[in-house]
Image 1 (cartoon, rainbow over the protein chains, first blue to last red):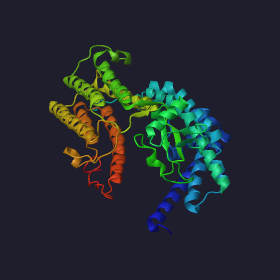
Image 2: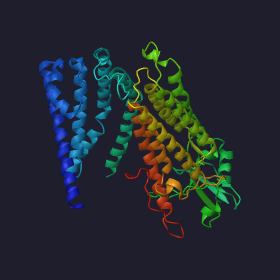
Image 3: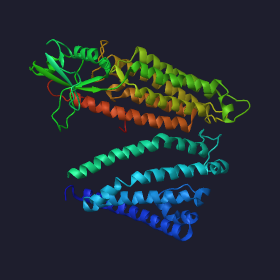
Image 4: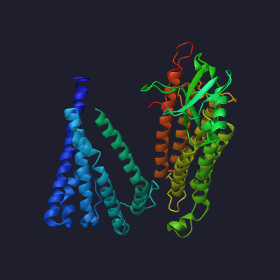
Length: 186
Length: 311
């Protein structure tokens, strides 16, 4: 094998890593859909909380019972399942099947808007709670002359979505064009 | 000679090309392009020699001072240049002036005016000596930078894209306000010992003086006729470190932060160090590449890049 032992170890590590995260998100998706179907959207968060924390940090607030938690989790997990299996295939097999490439560069067309809308929506409805609870806030005076206000940070985050969302979406559109054109030529 | 001007996609920019004298310079060509297109001021024109399609090499940029003859390789009948529009340009002096003016004006606003009332802090504000010295130190720093912009620096390029004005001003003005907010805060806590403050400011000032001297040395590497160019820097700290000017600038901010002790100040220090390190690596590589010791050129000596003993 070209590159010898270090490169083989790297490939092994990346394979294991990507497939592990893939299974983490698969678990989240299965659990989310199952709970949604059996118990309703109010229960989705508590069902996926553990595996979700493993795969991603999530804001744990009163928003837990909201339907947007389901849309968020499902959007994220489908996207990540496709993404990590894409990388996993690359590392393990050396190539990715064309249908997976297509999925990776097409599902975002729907899932970015649904995911972003869910993120923005949840932050927005959480705002009153964030302000009341003072969670994660650091106040002056202190030795290092620092402060953090979670409420204003959340508002700043919402602001960033305004240029950030369209920018990410159009970037993916460009990537899609390049990736699918490339695979067509091959 | 006839000069064809094409865009990077191959489209002819000026129908029928241009007619220039055989002894014309690149600057003459740029003037002529500007005359014909009206829109493209010479500073927005990037003219390069055509590359073979699929070539991975970097295109050769025409130097405005050189004669066209230097690039035609003897072929004076038809010469093709590839044109790229660099967008609206501003002079480096303009760019630097506006980005430094922000911190110079905004910081004192937090010190002198009852700004914190609007953040919900009512009542009297006790100003600690360190906050006053910090004001002097900060304003001196940015005043120095503006003076150097107009009287010391000799720039490698005359202009920079207009978009950099917004980007750079956002960076300096935001960080300036961010730091000013915390240092001048009514609930600001000075460092425990007076000595810490004194050491911080003294060290910082020393580094600012050293930084100024570095700038003078760099200036003297370039001629006043000024079209940039690169020389091996020598003397003072440059004998040990390629980008001693960045080194002294980083340490100067460290001095400020030791004296004022805010997370905001340290965050700025880290980000600024990151940015300057990237610049320093590029400069170091460029100098090593330029001064390779071949064909009579001196060889670039072994030196630290920016922060001994780390890099």
